[in-house]
Length: 348
Image (cartoon, rainbow, N blue to C red; front, side, top):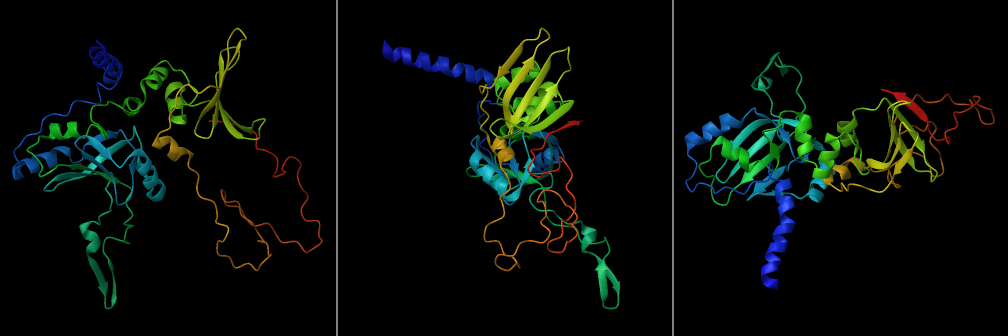
């Protein structure tokens, strides 16, 4: 009896997940056994090139993009985060991208997005003209070859089978959304069902990131940056004005850490317990901070000598005028102590 109950129990657990991803995750279709002909190659390349789609995953820039083989996408989220930290971000879930080039090889289909991994020069940039020993490009100054795109490789075991453009689109569904009508719809499809429902009802959940809050509530009329009782920096977004309902959405790092709602009747509702866990590669990229200056960085200063005009790493400022030793220097202005925590309100 127990043997018969276990499959039913396992099926009951899997059914909600199957329905949740019914639109995005399809059972892998049986691929044709024939090898793709040269004529079909040209048709598929023409069908997909220059098509605009929405990304469903993070795409790293650099020499390595994403690969799909037997429905499995590699590299994994952790490896993608490392690649983005090293090379930069080409696209995030919900972004509209363009398939700029399609190359069909013996056992793979390579699709470049937003220009691909390498920026190719135009034909006229190779032409030079000049007078005597002075030569220069006709097309103007050489352009930077640093590309900001990425690529997807659809890999097969032995050879590329005889596929139509629509069949290739189905195989690319783990990374591309070909059916979304707009960016908001494409982005929401990449989120967990609980977050999708909250955005649909214009609700904020503790644990959401900034993009999710904007899709749920729009951009705030006011923002406040300050420090809490523990000295931790936070940013608070304010929605609504009294006597209407007012929501205070507090971010610490990349996600909502506290939600305070002042109702029309004067009731105060505070939520701090995490309602959605978004430990994804996208959140890790948003939380990642640039590496600080190493302790043994090269310098021209002598041992014990201080920098004359220290610069703030985040802003470009003009150096202060030098003052002789023992002189009082410029008078300080009240409220401008650099140790004072920032507190300001900005209207968008």
